[in-house]
Length: 200
Image (cartoon, rainbow, N blue to C red):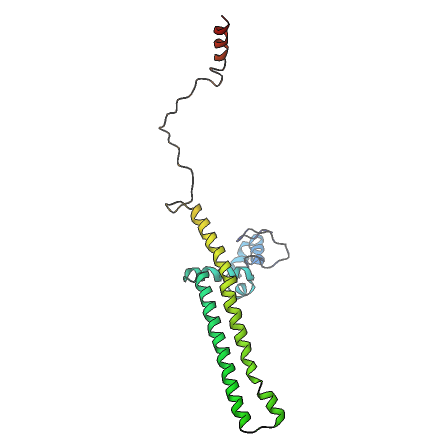
């Protein structure tokens, strides 16, 4: 069965389209009995939204971000900013735990607890490493994604003409007169006459 919304071929057992999430059961019902389809319109319910594929949801998310002006470049900077903040939190947590645990140890604890408390500052390494990973991802991986999107946008602008429409051939000028020969074969034997004159 062809999905009426996106045109992809789906098996007859599928209730929802794997690509766009359209309700194929309702389409079958509408084809068999148009009156019954009016009674059960599943196209606008939360159930349809729940069964939409991840790809369709991702495309909607990208389109919404584009409309709000959130470009991949902005997301890249936000990712780097989040990495710097997370790294700073990790360093601050390590320093805080090191100083705080020194005070706890100095107040007097058992020897077995000293070994654990003196190394508790390592907990701050987790947000530090996460922050470094975000920074590296923003600087390297996301930069490549931005470059890919800019290339795609540039290619799209090249396809579109300066007037905003797609490039196309100019319309034919029907007033233009292009004189042509009377025949395709006219003048093809002219060289024979020149050879005849040379012989004489």
